[in-house]
Image 1: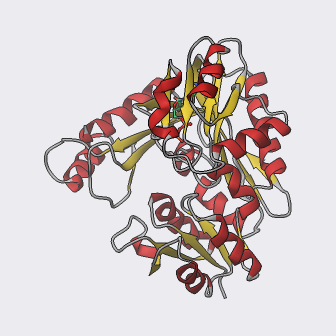
Image 2 (image 1 turned 60 degrees about the vertical axis):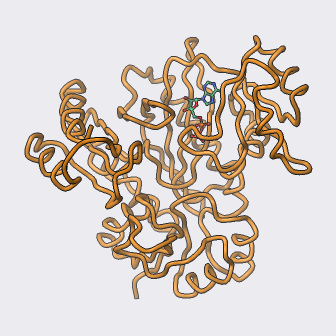
Length: 374
Ligand code: ADP
């Protein structure tokens, strides 16, 4: 009987696991939040991932549980583990992707380079940090942020009062130094429960309005030393935190050639979508292999350069289907991926991958295809 992998969460990451699951003979099942989710095709149940009974009912018929997102509460995860369910990544690892303060403290213990940071409970503590860091800082809500929500650049201790007001007993905000980075990078690795780790080449990620817009793989002009440093950081974190499955480490490259860890994702990640068409093993297949404890696949690029451009829902007229078909006809070398989601302004509804020998050509083709949606 095929190995059954259950994915909690029905978004596009779960959706993009479906094709590789079919290819390598995994029986993929999805617990979707509602009907009509991106991963509808494999959704065998609809339920609330915060509801232990709903999650227990879903996992009864699977061999391994993994995730489309990091929001399943710790008490639900720990109850599953106590039931004897194989959960990858497990709660001990996932806590570091769920809470940025917990992550900062653990990375400090591991000696991983990261921005200066502090846990602050009120405006006075924030002010003291800002005074010691040139009068500026980045305040973050430790939990629940995504796509730049829950991140604020501040210049005064009072600029986070609305967030301080929401804190419960014993809770704090994270403040970080405002890093003047030259660009953002991402390092992905995959780790099996037994410890085998493989690494993808470090990539450059370009953000617009707090959302990933483009990815260039490998990171153009990255000296070997930098690439090795990024890979070393990825491996140390995967091992030190006991991550199973895919791990993405978002990084800042500074003008003095240091790299600092911004944040972690323990699942396939937007920075790795290029691997679908640009690497021997895509991050989605790799994630399935890793969580199912199968031998990991080759991470080598298939072409010298790969480019990924996200497609966001925009004001464009006509149906999304028309746009996809126009993009396909205009740019046959572009690999177009759709998420089956209703287009709302700013919402990720798909992406374009192009792999080739020439970086400028690949960028041109990918942007030209994506421009049909703008
Ligand atoms: P999210 O969890 O919403 O993705 P991040 O922590 O990744 O939030 O921050 C979103 C963006 O804000 C980053 O991609 C980066 O551009 C910017 N940013 C975050 N932290 C810092 C920092 N310490 N210094 C400078 N810019 C930052």
